[in-house]
Image 1 (cartoon, rainbow, N blue to C red):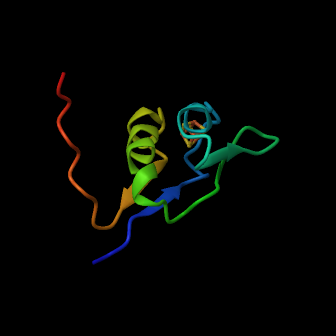
Image 2: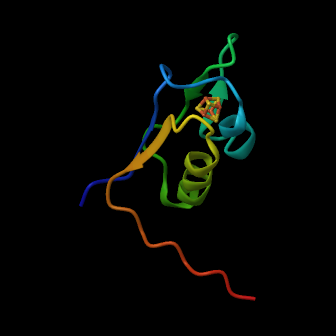
Length: 76
Ligand code: SF4
């Protein structure tokens, strides 16, 4: 099993800041606004935030790799 790994490609980052707002435990921004990855191997409980940050990044700079648990369907 490959543990989940998170990457932030700072060469693609445009400094929009969505990641730091969406997942503040996983991302920060440097003085230029570029993403700083805080936890490259996120724990299971942070994977939904990691997925959301990757989905919302406008430049596609965030990627989540490894064996990921399936997302649970939303039920109400
Ligand atoms: S959301 Fe994407 S473009 Fe914006 S700061 Fe984070 S990595 Fe950079």
